[in-house]
Image (cartoon, rainbow, N blue to C red; front, side, top):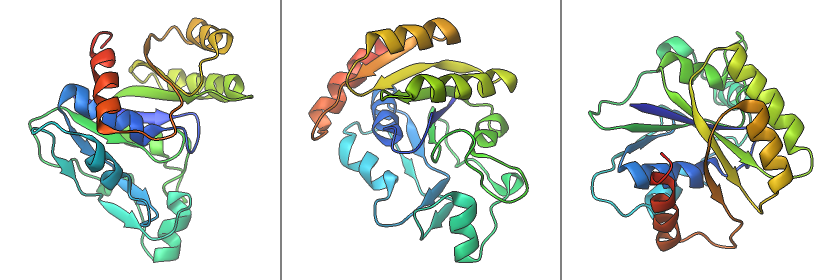
Length: 203
C-alpha cells in the first residue's frame, strides 16, 4: 500500500509525521522531490526511525534551492514531469512525502504535488499544523482533495492542541483523526516510537 503525506502548507511537520508512519508500519520511505540540499528530509527520517525493515529510497529529484519545486528545478536547469516519476522497487508499504502543500507546482505545465498521490494511487494522510488561520487553509485543502475524489486515510494534527479548531475541521471533512502530535523542542527516536504506538491504535 502507498501512503502520501501531504499538508495544508509548508513547515507543517510532514517529515516528522512521515517518520512516525514509517516507524509504525515498518514501511519504506520516499520523498520523490526534495528542494534544498542543506536539510534533506530523508536524512531526518533516517536519524529517527529504529526498525530494521524500512528502506529509505533516494530522491528522484534532489534540487539545490529551497524553493517551490518548479522554481528550484528551473534554477537547476532540469524539468520535472509527472509522467517521468516512477516508484522505487519495493514489496513493502511505502510512505511518500510530498513537498509543501497540495497545490505546490512541480512544473509550469499545471502539474502539482497532489498529482503524485493520484498517479501512484496513494492513500492520503493530511497533516494540519495548528495556527491562527489553519481552519481556512485546512478547508481549502480538504475541498481540493474531495474535488479530486482522492482517498484520504485521515488527518494528523501537529502542534499545541486546539480542540475547537480540530473539532470543526474533523466535522467539516468527515475524515478521522489518526493522531495528535504535540509541540516538542526536540524530537527523539524514543519519542517517535511512542507516537508510532499511538498511531497504530487508530490506523
